[in-house]
Length: 206
Image 1 (cartoon, rainbow, N blue to C red):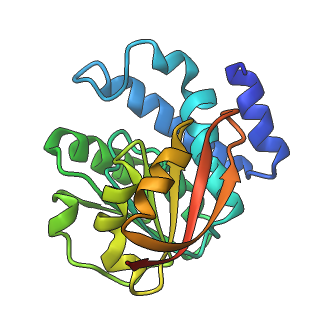
Image 2 (tube, one colour):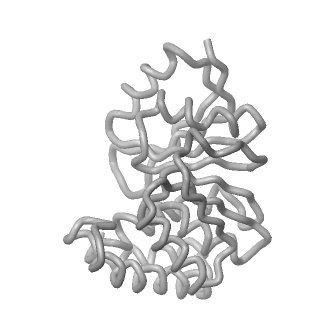
Image 3 (cartoon, rainbow, N blue to C red):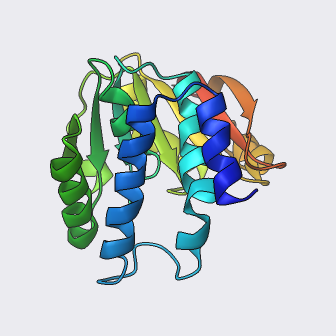
């Protein structure tokens, strides 16, 4: 998929012009910051809409713009900053949890310049006090068993997990089920033939 096709796919899915403009701003700032340190790979900026923005925006179908979201291991802001652009259209709020200070500086800069309803939390995930949230998200952060350990404080308080997983997602799920009883749905990815978004509705330790 080309960059133009990815943008068109988002417009056809009903993403507002205002949100698309903010996502353009996010890409511009990411391009500036990546020259300072390695936020993304050198070849990725030319595929940023197809590989990262459209992928992250799949969650717009599940997460409303009024939802409270906690994104774990936010890194370069996918899906967290994309969800922040979405939340700006409603009454939602997004907390980005990231342990690397330089990445947090980037996340905070984008948040300030685009006026997003986002809070940047510069802590290791396991040290963050749990809060009430509607959704807990993560993309390319940790294997599912570890991700459930990290997410438990929010999941146990009623949050729904939305975790991006690649072609080995079934292996990760099998490993997680050795320690957890899960109520889940595997939502096929729109950007990967072998990937899914694992929607964890309930998680209890075995």
